[in-house]
Image (cartoon, rainbow, N blue to C red; front, top):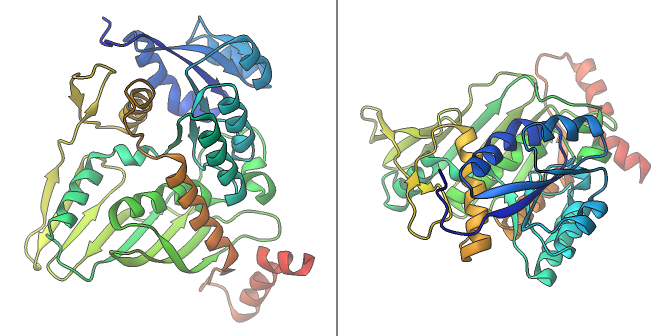
Amino acid sequence: MIHSAAPRLDIAVIGCGAAAEGLYRYALGALESRGIARVAALVDPNPVRTAALQRHFRAARTFADPADAFASVAVDLVIVASPPGMHAQHTVDALAAGSHVLCEKPMAIGAPDAERMVAAARVARRILAVGMTRRMYPCLVEAQRLIAQGTLGDRLRFTYREGRVYDWPVNSDAAFRRATAGGGVLTDIGSHVLDFLSALFGATTATSYADDAHADGVETNCRIEVVCPEASGVVQLSWNQPLVTRLRITGSAGELMLDPGRIDALRVRRGGGTWETRISTATWPSDLATRGRGDTPRTHRDCVYHQLVQVLRAVTHGEDVPVDGERGLAVIRAIDSCYERATSFELPWLDAAERSQADARHWTRRRCAAA
């Protein structure tokens, strides 16, 4: 059944690896089955990856190089899901070809590249969206509402912990080298976390940052002290420890807890009373109809779908995207600020001599020595 009242849109995907397969394939399949959009091009230098994805999108043409795809196929939206170090160039090329862009996070591996992407979108007069799917979480909408109405009072403080053993499928060591990935757990999970906090409290500013990266490698653990216009707190992230993942916010009048693993629920209590679970019913459009029905996302896969729909609605109706290039740039600047002030992460289980050795191996020491 076709649910869309608008013409079908054509989409190209640059990068047919884990992000395309694990995040976007199901959402794109749903868009095709509902007659909203069609995958017209798949681009990846590895023909095995394009062939694997083409099995799900039979009408798509495959290309090894984005330039060949842009010369052969005109599309409305390009999803940039290539490795982070290639995001900037692929985005700039897609915008120059006349397409709107949804770029997977992290937007870029440094502010200069992100600024170049924003400038290219401005010149091309095209939409640049950044894939921050947590903006589609219903619990975020409910938390914003509770904070705005003063349920927690003032003097807001937060603690955000998120950690798991790294299990993302990779085809090379590029994700673990600073030159190709830009960073580790901070650029990966931290992109989402810093954007989520900015959605709740305003722009994030790091006042201190520590990580455990050595030499040319990337961090697996980090700790950030953060100040926002409406709150301040601490963020701890890990790629090798299963931390109790939770955002806890305390204020003069109440407390709130969010678990990113339960995207539609939160817990709140006032004045030290009983914890109450709230299930959010916030909805997002499910198609391109101007008065179409909305759905409440219940899984991360739902959020990817609704994010794509919202980007396509921006293309067809001029609506806002969940996160645009300017807001994506703000996150990259916040990450850069962390790395600029990086110190060695304290590892309390090491003795004094071992701590000294770990500090000496920290990547900022290598950077300073090279300078």
